[in-house]
Image 1 (tube, rainbow, N blue to C red):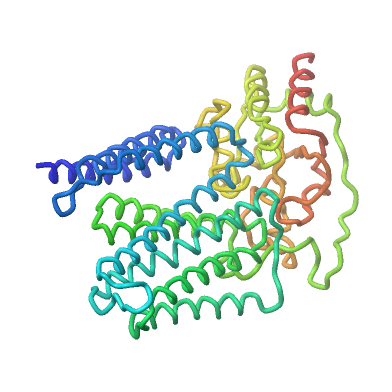
Image 2 (cartoon, one colour):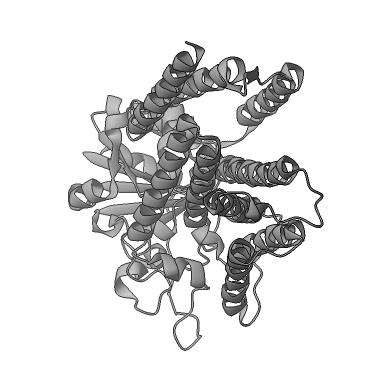
Length: 476
């Protein structure tokens, strides 16, 4: 009876994972979807703790189990409460890395169980003589993929928060390929022609996998980190699914497959949004704003606009589009932005938001940021919808966005972002760009938009600029 109840718990967990993932695809239901999936996970966890049996024995060790759960819950709760929206991508990367570490640790524990189950020492036995090779293949897959995900995610976390700089050396990609081949070869040798002391080789594979994860992420440009995080997330899902196979745990298997599939699809969608292949992201990286000859482009001069002129222009417009970017997140200006939106609408101005798929530091970054300020979901238009309406727009206000509005992606074959789909803001009658300075964006490329005749620069911190702009409009 208890087994049947546990099966029902796992079924509930699996179904809620699928429902939660489906709900996450819509901003209006995303929060509820997260809670639904979390509730299912809670049912699966407590079902395992109290109902799981093996050999007629339950888990026990409740003090250790609940102690670990309590510590993890407290750390996770306060970390999530304190994290700034600007730091959300690196937190996602760090949490993803922890999932990879768990998968690798499961493989290590299960390998040691194999050794102990045979009743032999670490140095003179070959557990594969007694164990189904398929089990050991899954253990090695979990070890390798989980270790790569953990090490790579930690490096990605460091690069996003600025504590780790891009690092590469001549021939690094060849080195990475050779290192991966060595790992695969050693794993194949361990399975097919196991040595007398397999533990030593097993831990060599573990160390080399960690090393590969580090060097895999090191050379990738900072602008491509969201793609890498998504790819590593799919790795973690696959590694977790390996754990589900090992334990014959349906909910763990389902969760791992969902994470792996979702991460893979998200990676493909981001590459499509940048019009780049995954191979190009992993092997190439964004460089500086130079031509093919290596010379800086001559851009001409830009023009500035005052707050009072901006207030007049926006107040007497029929349609205004706001394009949020990372600068908005840094300034924590989403609430001021929503206040500006409501003020303009009270004057009869139609206000909408144009969201690029990779705006900010990860997909959905801007959607979550604006949802935090209670911006209605129906005002958030995707790139394709917005591009159809820009030609009928009086003013586009760009708040901290850079690379996703750079016309060089369409007009300059020498640009590193050439071919990347962008928001066609230059089609609007007037373009106002709010930035702190003329420094390049995340990709390190100068923006041609800033020097076009219809574009005006409004310098300053996004939050203060918006607050001052609101005051100016109220005084009209």
